[in-house]
Length: 122
Image (cartoon, rainbow, N blue to C red; front, side, top):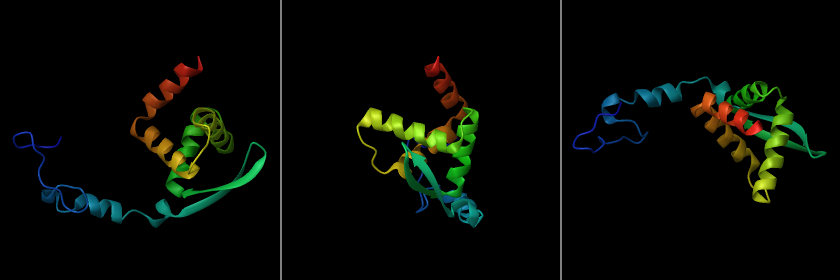
């Protein structure tokens, strides 16, 4: 829990963590294995068109988890997301960013996200 003084947050340092934490959060992020943020490019077919998607390896792991939870392969899941985004928005700009944001949505609340998907399916 964040301690406040008169409802105001304490000062932040450049990393966004509280000054009194001595940059511990920055250290945790900075010292993670480089494999976590290495780019991985995968070739997939979307609507019969061959394309490639370049994401950090951590995002591919989350996409695998999401796809598995829905009994899909990653290519099938990505194709479904693309088709639904195209249907909803009329176009898909920056698809890699859309996938990253999907991963973040899932990572923040995996159970709630899966429950919502199941309720909309029924």
